Amino acid sequence: MEGLRIPTIDLVIIVAYLLGILAVGVLSVRRQRMTGEVYFLAGRSLGWVMIGAALFASNISTIHLVGLAASGYNEGLVWGNFEWMAAFTLVILSLFFAPFYFRNRIETLPEYLERRFNAAARSFLAFMAILGALFIHIGMSLYAGATVFEQFFGIDVVTSILIISLVTGIYTVLGGLKAVVVTETIQTVLLIGGSILVTALAIGALSEQGIGTVEEFKAQLKPRQLSMVWSDNSVGLSWYSVLLGYPVLGIWYWCTDQTIVQRVLAARSEHDAQIGPLFAGFIKVLPVFILVLPGVVGYVLYGDQIGDDANQVLPMLIQELVPTGLRGLISAGLLAALMSTIAAALNSCATLFAVDIVARVRPSTSDAAQVRIGRWSAVAVMLLAMAWSTQGDKFSSIFEAVQEIGAALAPAITAVFLWGVFWKRGTSQAAVATLVCGFLMGAAAFILDFKDASGHKLITDTWGIPFMLQAFWMTVICSVIFYVVSKQTPPPPEEKVAGLTWDNPMRALTRRWAGAGTDPRHLAVVLCVVIASLYVLFR
Image (cartoon, rainbow, N blue to C red; front, side, top):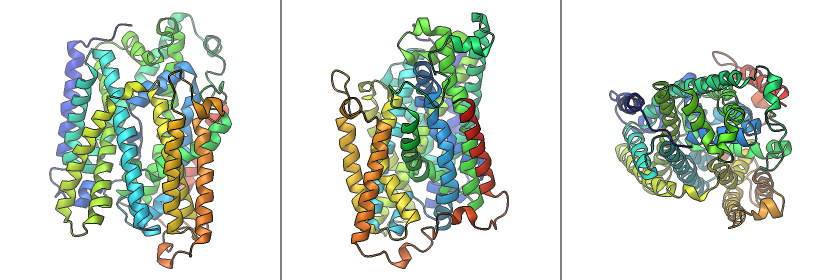
């Protein structure tokens, strides 16, 4: 397929968008004195709408737009589990984690580990979080975006990476979290609107192929391509793999990853900190229909032309169905997704480096110096991510690569946070041992399961354990390490558990609601019922 070559009107729209989002990002903080709390946590001023929109926007990247469409084309809606299962982990964030984070006024997730355990746990988590942001959130997103724009407009990968990095880096480095969240809110609207447009045009085109009913549509699909539960298991997404493995990745990503949770830490009230994630959970219903389903429809419309190169399905839909002018808006939507993810990760890296590393090594570091160090660290991380992003062509599937890297990082972090929040007996020695052992175990598993020259994976293909089940079993091992070491070491002092753990896990669900506004538990029940009903409908 010939790549799209951009008409003048589309180019004008894209350039106007880039300049506009840059101006909005910089001007959003023009009247604020740039203290550490303003730069890293938006002055703790975010309401639940901004928190929810920013959570969604910082999660959805070009990897999702292109990768989920391609996955829908190849296997079907089953990849949408990464979206709908996220709603359940957002409920966990809202009810169990957000209250602790907000009440303790922490700036970073590693800071919580220091209060609950010790400084060593904080430092190691900060190290792991920066690695995750660099390799997953920024590096792979840059490469995915660059390859898309090379295919669309004929701009080479390196040039695309430089342009995207420059624009995103400027407003993130200068404006901090407030600039990131303001631009993310705008980009969420554009992203959802553009995706709905492509989906509507694709479904409308089915009638031109003589397909007028759902049954006629299903007849053109592969078996189980519209099922969220059943797959052929060739991609390791059997129902039990998802049920056991996704909570590990989901709790790590949505409840403990600085890039995501930083929006919750910046809430203006505990109520906003709890309602924001639930709002994001309701928005997460949409991607299955506006990101995965278009790939399924594309299989019916253009399967003969696309063949095995599934990554072409989104560009093909845009080329064939979207008129000039609107095509520029869709391209701007792709940019919106890319820039949101990169900006979120950059600001988080700046926060982690300045607050969790520099400020701890040099406690006398002034507030202004922390902001300055955060900005320069964001520049350094962006440069490293740009270099790493040029290696993206080494992976056969970027979306799957991101999940596999996450599966290597998640087990240790998920285990430490779950035990730390729900078990008072957990000790600092156990936390450090679990983080170190889990990180080494995850790195070893990722290397052993890396495709060899023949495309063979040792753990997945020889041992029959796909990456989702690997994540589950590594979490079990990490939990055993945490429990055994805790039992072999002295109990933590009272100041390490008071206000930092639940006396009883059920208290989050049974305690009397004394706050203003809607009880988050009521919204959580509605969200769970909605997701469960959708699973029944698309089983």
